Image (cartoon, rainbow, N blue to C red; front, top):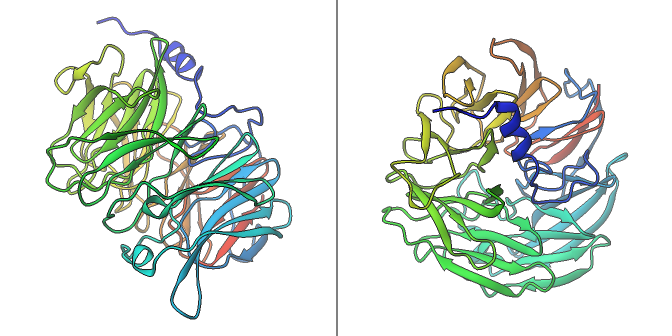
Length: 417
């Protein structure tokens, strides 16, 4: 079968972005403006340590693994802040990008203690990443609520009507598409995907997942793509990945992957293919052709799969014709994005949860101990640097022009060349 040239496919895939990228160097949501982990930023740091290349570090109150997002010189985070009585307040924070100064700290929700305490050891009550767009900050705490604030920290609306019982807490971030805020609510039973009106917080639609998987909980962040002029919301889940109509939540197509559950990675769209992982217990990396897919497309839409080195938690990143990924156990791979051919597979130190970031022919792989391996974005393996920040982290890094922001367990760091 004749294939369109990869450059044409990539150009077509970039025509549609869920966020308006007026400020191309902002990082306004999980995995950046195009939700793919790729940044055009220049002059990012290559080497650092706790005593080298740190422009500033500031202590962040509470606990949270939401990744930092950047917009117009500001940094936005969420955090779960405990008090002496054992209760937790769910906070939104804004810091100055140049100095790290805390500009505002707003408690958005104070859930029942039981709602915030049932967490996996690698999770927190503030793990989903905020979105900044259109003069608003959207924060999501899964079963504990979703809210919008203005850029001064005033709460505009709160939504707490979508209740479900989570397993291990919450983790998936929302997708902002037009004026809809879309997210999965994939808990212990009766899982669903829902859309809120981003202007008011009112529920626009709610659709059951209808999966046959035995374990029904997952944590993936939806992605938005455009296929044949039609917008689709892509949401991996336990047992299958599905495309939904963003207007009403109608299922457009799905691809099944057996009993895969606890799905975490956000899908990436490039070269006309969707790249995603099937989750636990045995992950496989899938490349799926959404064009022409309809109904159950499990037998027709899969372009290739890869099991060795497939991630359970980190998302993948595509740079040119190559896909880069890292397994939770630290097996990093470079794969031909169109064919699935493995160019190289190398072990990096440590275990991984954060998603890699690519910028200027480099891929930054950040492990759970706070060590970043910087690898050349090329089909031949070349380790450029290994940098130990000295603080545990599960959050994904945020690049900016001349800087890299990393959230540790207790501090936020700005790293510079």
